[in-house]
Length: 430
Ligand code: PSV
Ligand code: MN
Ligand code: MN
Image (tube, rainbow, N blue to C red; front, side, top):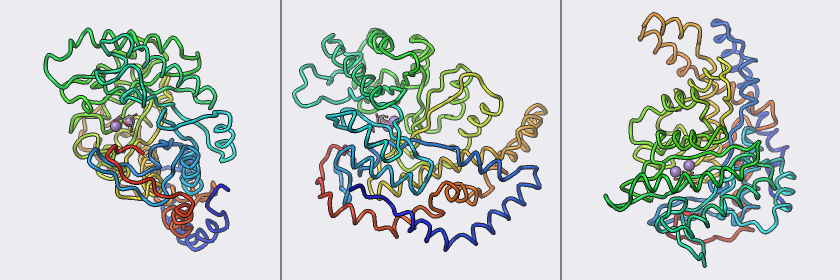
C-alpha cells in the first residue's frame, strides 16, 4: 500500500497554526496595500507556482569518498514517486518529477505512468545519462559520449538519448535534458574544435528525433568529471550549440555549474533575450557543483535570478516558458525535508520578485539612480513573504508548516520498516 501523509493530520496541524497565520497574513496584506499591492493577487500566483523534484534527489546523496544512507530511503522509482508525492502533499508546489535514465530502472512504462497518475504526479524533463558505463556496455564512455573519437561510442550515446525520448513519450514528458561530462583532463589531450564538431553532429541526430512539441535542453557545467576542459563548459558553448541545433534546443542553467562569482542573473537575461532559456536546476553552492539546498547560502542571488524571470513575465517576453527543477544532493539531511525546504525557498524568491515595483525600478534605471534602483530590489527582497507561502499551501490542501507536519507524521520511520537499508558505497549515486 502506498504510504502517504494523512489529510486529517495535515488539517489538525494546520488548525494549531491557523489563527497566527491569519493575523500575519492580514498584517502583510496591510503593509503591501500601502504600496498598492493586492496580497490576494500575489497569493494566487504563489499557488500557481510549480517546481519539479529530481527523482534522484529523494535518495541520500554522497561524494566519491562515501555515502551514508539514510533510513528508509527509496530503493526504486516507485518508492521515489511515493516520497515525491509526500513532498507535494505538504508543499503543494511540486506536482512534477524529473527522472534520470538508466538510474531509474523501468521495466514497464505503462505501469509506471499508471502509478504516477494514481499519485497525481506528472513527469518533467527526462535526463539522459551517458557519463558512466552501464554493466556490460559494449563501447565505453571513458573518453566521452556524444563527442567521443570512437563512432561506436557516439552511436551508443545517441541511441540512449533517442530511447529517452521514447520513454518520455510514454510518460507524457515534453523535454529531454542532456548533460554530458565529455572533456579532457590534460592540455593537448583533445582537439577543442573537432570534439565540439563531433558533439554537435551527435546532437543534430538527437534533435532530429525530437517530436515537434518537445524541447531539447542543454546543460552546461564548468568542470567535473573532466578537470581541464569540458565540452559544454559554459553558457557560451551552450547557447552556440542551442543556436546551431534550432528553435527547439534551449539552454538549461544549473546554479552550481559556474565559476565562483559569475553573474548568473545576467546569463539568465541574455538567454531570455535570445529565446534560449530552457530551464533551471536550482541548488546552491559555495565552491563548485556542491548541490546544496536551494537558497541556503545565496538567497539574494536566487532572488535576483527571479527578478529577471518575473521581469520577462511582466514584459510578456516572447517564447518565455522555462522549466523549474531542483537538482540537489542531500548528504546529511532527510531528502524529503531538504526538497520541501528548497521548493519553498525557490517559491519564496519568485514571490519576493513579484513585489518589485517595476515602474519605479525602470524610472530609477532611466535616471541612473543606482542607489534607489538597488533599494527597490532590496525592499522586495527584505519583505518577509512567509505568510503568503503558508497561505498558498493551506488553500491548496498543504501544510502551513511542512517540516513540522512531516515530522509529526513519522513517515520516515514508517517507510523504514518496509525499506531495508541499501548500504553505503562510494559512488555518490543512489
Ligand atoms: C551534473 O552535475 C548534473 O547537474 C546534471 O544535471 C546531472 O544529470 C545531475 O547532475 C545528476 O545528479
Ligand atoms: Mn544539474
Ligand atoms: Mn551538477
